[in-house]
Image (cartoon, rainbow, N blue to C red):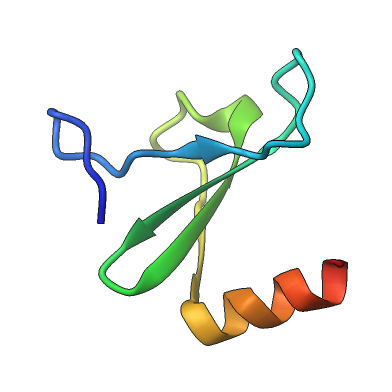
Amino acid sequence: MTFHSDNKPAWKKSSRSNANTACVEVASEDGMVLIRDSKQASDADYPTLSADRADWNAVIHLLR
């Protein structure tokens, strides 16, 4: 698990995102994958989705 110095997850943008902020970001925390909309990253009250690794891998498999 990777955290910044402020003890928040280290979010990673999709490698397929372009220069705008319309993309998905993911982070790993306690065996779960966290997913958020990068446009809402600064809003602490905006919901973040989470999935266990098996479910996340199934989603990625379906998208490929």
